[in-house]
Each structure stands twice: as C-alpha cells, then as structure tokens.
Image (cartoon, rainbow, N blue to C red; front, side, top):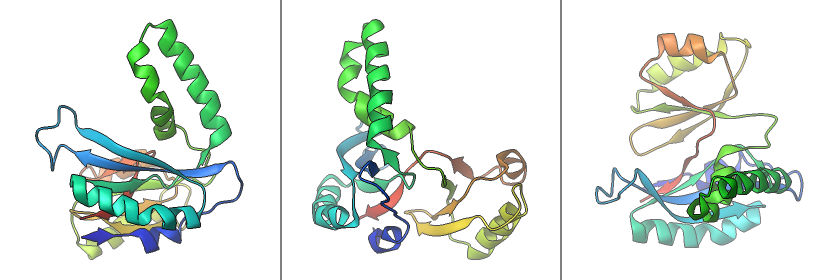
Length: 193
C-alpha cells in the first residue's frame, strides 16, 4: 500500500475561493486488462481545502480499494472561473462538431488540461527506486536553465517515484535521460492499495 496523503498535503496551497485541486480515482488497464481503454475514471473530486481533502480521504481510499484503483491528484491548482470559460468553449466546439456524446465529459476533460498555477510543477516518472540515480538526475536538472534549485518533492509510486520539480529546459534533459517521462500536466499518486 502507498499512502501519500500526509506528504502531499504539505504541497497544497489554497489561496482563494476560486482555487481547487483536481483529484480522480482511476482504474488502469495495467491492473484491469478487461478495460476497453487505458483507464476508467471511477470518481472525480474538486478539492477546495485541506479540511475537504481530509473529509473525503476515507471515501477515496474505500473506493480505490473496492475498484482496485488509485487516487491521483494534479499538483497544479485549477481555477473554477478559468475552467468554466474553457469548458464553455469546449462544449460549444463539441456541439458545433455534432459531438454530442462528449459534452457530458467536457468539464473533467478541461480540468485535466488547464491549470491556473503560476508556480508550475512537473512530474518526472521514474520506474525504479535507485536513490543515487535519482539524486544524480536532480543535480543534472538543477544545472539546466533556469539554473538553480528545482526540487519540490519525491513521491513514491507503485514502481518507483514521481520526482516533482519546477520547470526546466526539457530538451537537454531528454537527451540525457531518454528513459524518464516528463509530465507537465499529469497527476501523481495519493493512494494505491
């Protein structure tokens, strides 16, 4: 079991009534080969405070255990106002393209695509637990433009870690670390059974 709730709570900032974090309970094809797609969303949460996260924690864990799923959070805050405008545009585009079936999923789709974070956080997906290699990777990142500290946190995953950083020159990074994936708009793990 991996429970990162307490660790991740320290990374969350709620600076206005408009800010929220986007959480989902996700079933993945890796654990469920019968799924038609790569993943299935069991439930979505729009968390506006640490108290609300604590309130839903038990429910999230229960649903994740029941569905053999994972609880994920995007560490880049969202804005209800900006999401509403992006959603309005997306729905209008879907209707114009006569894609009526997709309209019901547009809000979550927009939440997954648009953050309102001025201090962006990226995820480097590392599928091993060799701390020495991870430290070498971090030192390399800190020498990339903009030079300086970029480490935010190291979150344990099922097969390794998510190295959470601030943005850096990705081109030079991918030349050296081809085996790692860099995600600019992806969730990290809050909980896995």
